Length: 146
Image (cartoon, rainbow, N blue to C red; front, side, top):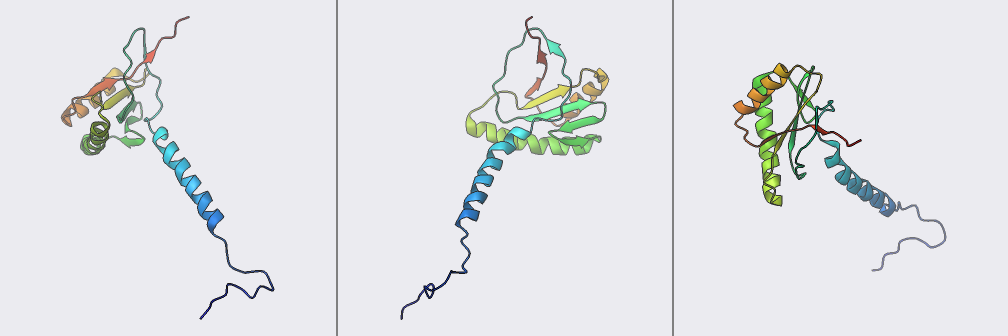
């Protein structure tokens, strides 16, 4: 019993999916590489510091504070309980990733907008303390030498 793929006297109507699969795999790899770089929280104007130690980049959680509220990565929170629950979940994932890569530095980075009232940033710091997070780093801009 032999099978043939065509009569040989005309074009085949079979669809060649190999190029489609190749394109999909390339797109998947591109998205896998680019997606981790998209995080980092909401853009806020940071205070400027003259001297600071640079921290090693690793798996962290970014909390941003501006006049609109507190943000964990890109998600906005205005209620303490919701914020603490989301923060605990995000920090748990980040700590696991950091431990797997041998990173012991600060896990949570707090970014406060320079134009935002300090009292608002202080309230968010109390929320973070209520979530029992110990490894916190405040993010500032470094003054450029002129």
